[in-house]
Length: 338
Length: 296
Image (cartoon, rainbow over all chains, first blue to last red; front, side):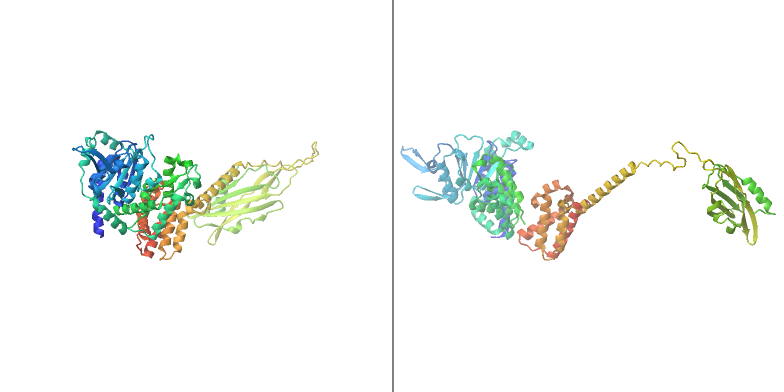
């Protein structure tokens, strides 16, 4: 595998990003993070207000990558079996059992959307955890493999009733948690309101080129990319400091207002989280056209990989929305690289 | 009051000469001839203009010192300048009288002859005697007043007001102290203001490094920038840094070079030619120091 191949792939990746930016306008950083996740082969949890374009974004990604995709709406009565198989009576009146949405496409399944994941029961979460972590599930007395599976889940923050908070273990399996806010730029809002193009999502997504990046090549590309980009000892030391700071922020002189720093955290980022962190940072370095990993790559992906892995102690949990960004900013702003 | 005796003197001068007078103009300027007491000084001024080439013989002037029993010549000054073909002399004489009269008395400052010469020819110009009256300091009979005192010293003069000079001194002192403090601030000598000497200290450390110690050099400069920024400064945060410290924007290219060099050295594992890069780093630090001092 050579640098030339990586350069060709980079051009395709940037084009892919540009196309998505044309479909979901006013969200360049969200799109950038999603693209990082695609090439780092990580699952993504999207969070945002209703109607900001989460589903449109995910449909555009699936369309662009090609491959099969499935989509499931989370509801309170959804059970794991509903994902694995479904039963019905055929024309002859005989009962039939067919593979459900998760199994239907077999190994060709590339993108799986789980809308409103927090409405599904914990039993469904646990099935999904296995599918995400091992990319396989057991059904009909055999294992089904999904080597190219990438799970995107979203949840909205408006309702709390009849929802199940994702357990820490489930959150940890997502590489990124990406917050998607309503655009505030007047030009973007005007475009979204008055440009006919954005009113019909089906046509909008269908207008995107497909197959530029083949889903079945992504795993090999990810391996090549991870091997090709390496960090120097200085950078490793910096990454280690960032990780440690997510456990012991007080050791790095990070102070938040009205907070006893030693009692702030219940748990910091997991080792899996750190491997995701470095993988994502390497993809960013590659997209920026570098072979070397720089501190700015680590900083760019720190918030999206860390915020859902750091757990505040119950005393401060109710101030999470206010404290977490401050903590992340504090860590990034207090730790010097060289 | 000064008396002008030009006419008389000139007439006398003309009488003293045969064909061509040696003097073209003579003036004796004298003060009032009355109202003097013992110890007073009397100023006389004589102005003489001579004809072509005629000079005053200094020996003909009265000698400084006692002229007689009661009259002293305290000072004599002669100024000579050219006027036409001849000279103009201004002679200042300061007499002091020591006569103690019992009642108002007429006295005379004696006259003398000025000798003017040209080659071996001489002519004389008479300065006339000057009469004046001298008064006693007190009555002849000593009279005592009710307190039994008659002679007494003058009342002490009122002291001069010193408010103005004292205020001026205070203001000047304040200005001096403020200027000193300002200079010390600019030069980074104030220990309490280390933020004004970040690059001074960094420059000192850089100067001590040898050409091969690029890593320490880069670290020193990173630390200086971090100290100025109050938090670690990365290349992608330079825009925010320039908003906070707009005066460093003029060094944008050099700071970009520094961050690229640092990134290559620390994170891409590329070696930079040490002495060259270190020299450039020192220059950059010196430029930052100038900005820090406000002289750039």
